[in-house]
Image 1 (cartoon, rainbow, N blue to C red):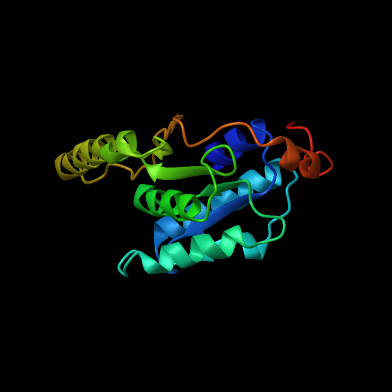
Image 2 (cartoon, rainbow, N blue to C red):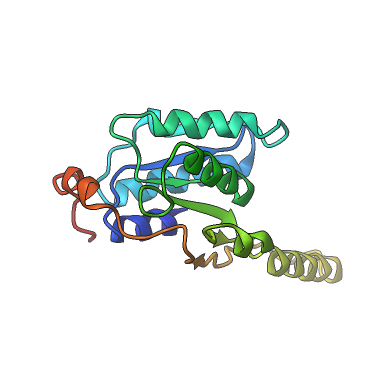
Length: 187
């Protein structure tokens, strides 16, 4: 998520919201931590009203309502980082249903890089999760551990590239004016 925040700030965004999954999930905790870290790195204030939580196990209504709540904030976020690509797709359709254009009025970024991202309108900018690579590496580490029980456990972080597509772009001129005094230069 840090990469997504960095990218959005480079495009001029300073009002960046985050839709997060349910409490108690490791992915939710890590994504929220990355969001906060990204804001901190750019001197942007963490705003509680810019973070909404919902449950993946429920129907899409929770995510629609969470997106609507973000769109009613003052100032309205110029970008939303969604909990995953499905949530991002719901956010795109919700924003469009309110008359907003993506990315002209609001940017939306997902997480996962699911195959359907290329079929959304607009196509979805997303953070790719290296699930196949992680599975392959986990099996290799397990087999190594079975062969040699004294193998030291490792903590490996795989790269998660940002896949840039049509749902993101430069912040609008009006929003740029409200951001000018809020952004600090990146060290």
